[in-house]
Length: 389
Ligand code: FAS
Ligand code: PHB
Image (cartoon, rainbow, N blue to C red):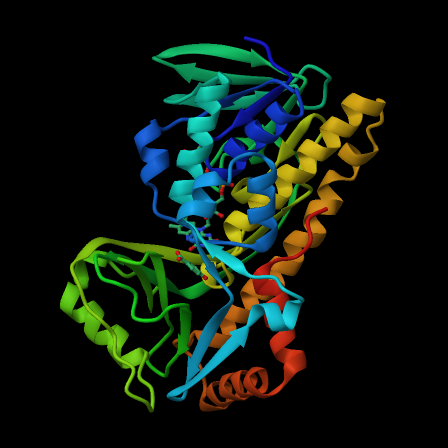
């Protein structure tokens, strides 16, 4: 098999990259180790930044998002029984975010890939990237028990944190922090109890109210790092959420049947560089953020837009300058998202070993955001997204 760009992974990074390259007239092959149902069902991100929404629309992949997505002009911060709304358009010159789940983005991109007839090989596991430092890199893969090789001009590792591509970058430097807590996430068949997302800081721990549609709620609870989701009954989850969302007014949390429950560890991670020869890393293959800032999926989008632009530039001009700048260009945006995600996580979560002084600092930081346009603007600009490229 032979192609211009070998893409490992059919998550949002790999699927969007295939679409962007197709629109630029560049052929690619996508290799995905799991089956289509797994990719389309994997509950993960829920918030698309303004930049991601614009990219999906320009790529011809935004039609259902515009029909079914929920545009949000703000979020609510809740602390010390207080409620403070952050007004995105007022603070960012008109930017907002879209509530449209990663599962739906992947379904839309898979449907487009099949419609355009580009090779998208499910249940096909990449085993290794070879010859990255030559002009003929190869991906060795296994499909239906048979090993084969994909000859490429370029390979892009979109294979997530546990993929194989990153290991083909020699002498990389990693920067990481793991947090002493996780998120217990649920899907519930009940209308969201608020029309926008609610991020709550409480002495008992963080809680987040999000949503998937007017009739499906998505909620998260901070839990100890080694939590087993089976230890949490539906009733225990709703009771704990209710306590952490408490307010001084008559706001109430609606309950309903929990249809999905899972625990997500919290980690910050960056691998530098994001390139070695003809191998490029994109998305979770190169970096991880704690989901508090809703950045993970959106960072993956920025990486693949940067690569697609750089390769289209080389195809048009013969110049490698944008490809040579890929890693530095992506990492500048990555580190801004890492800073924001770290800030939001330490602002809202109660660390098990937090001292009373640190608790008061958190409340002072939140009070500052609620009373200073400058502090509020920093949050609104970061949450609605950093410019791509
Ligand atoms: P992905 O991990 O999504 O996709 C990688 C793909 O590569 C997978 O389909 C995998 O099967 C495939 N693959 C791996 N190894 C392979 C191999 N050897 N050969 C072939 N294929 C291979 N982000 C947010 O913004 N908000 C959230 O709420 C949020 N929640 C999350 C919850 C969880 C449990 C996790 C793990 C992450 C969450 N994230 C969230 C982050 C998440 O959305 C990622 O940022 C996003 O999926 C990144 O997309 P990709 O880089 O495409 O990687
Ligand atoms: C989600 O809806 O899954 C979601 C929203 C915002 C976050 C994290 C997750 O910060």
